[in-house]
Image (cartoon, rainbow, N blue to C red; front, top):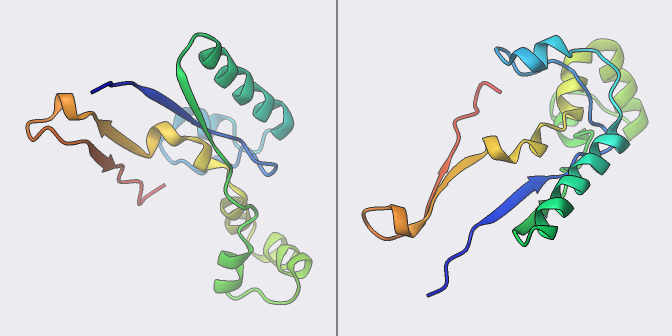
Length: 135
C-alpha cells in the first residue's frame, strides 16, 4: 500500500480582516483593527501552495467560507435585505459583524490533528478535531 502525506491550506476570502478575535493569541490581538489586504493575503497563500506543489508535495486548497455570514446575523435578530442586515450589524454590533466576516477558517492547521494509520495502535487513520469552542 502506498502512503503519502498531503498538505491542505485554507484560502483567504475577500473579508479577511484583523479583528483581534482570538483572545490569548498575541499576533491576533496586536494586529486588531489594522488594515488588511485580502487580495495580497490570498496571493501569498496561493504562492506558498504552488511552492510546495513545485517541490513535489501533494497540496490541497480549501475554499474560503461564505463571508459575511448573513445567516448568523439573521439568526441574531437582524432583518431586511443583505445590505440592511450588514448596516444594522455595523451600527449595533460591530464585534459580531467582525466575527461574521472572519476569515479564521483559513487557519486549517488549527482545525484538527491527523494521525496516520502507521502511527496508531489500531492501524486506523484518526482525525482529532480541535476544541476551538472559545475561538
